[in-house]
Length: 203
Image (cartoon, rainbow, N blue to C red; front, side):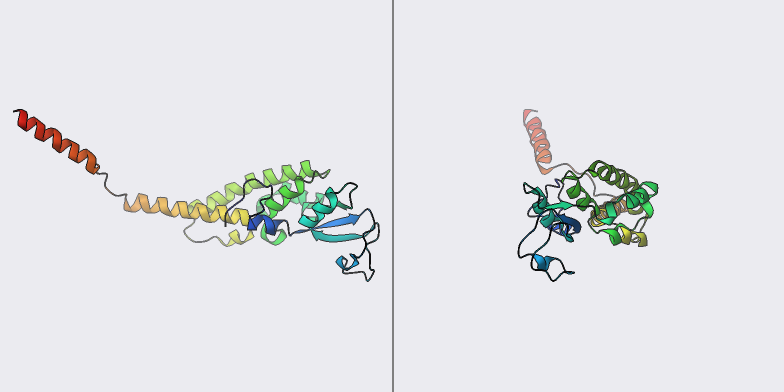
């Protein structure tokens, strides 16, 4: 799967599509007609003011971007202060795959919505990745078999881990078996032959 580096998100990126499918709590700031079915806990025809519903991020961002805003976006539990404190304490022990398979993509998309806690979320994303990256790199370089703990990585980290293992394996094979002998190109050999022939003719 190709990794999208822009976090726009990319319309053609499956990874971005799946990341924006993650749900966020939305508190409706105005009545919305005929969409009561979006609230699984209500039998009302309309969504009333003050109703909170968990919706996919892509839908929530559309509702929030209207002027006036239709719904205010809250934070999912994995990015609330309690979980941010856990990540700050020791991000390497957290099972990101269980929390959110697209943790970094999801977090960056949330930050783009300019939530009041976006700076804190952004800081946690960067610091967590920096610390976990060292661990991932160590696993990839010094393990001949797949590390069990790699199941706790989110999808971006898994991609980096598997790429690291492939590069490490290729380097190991090159160091142990040796590369092919370096030989002169055919063009160089022909050029040398021509020079020797011209030299013989002159003498």
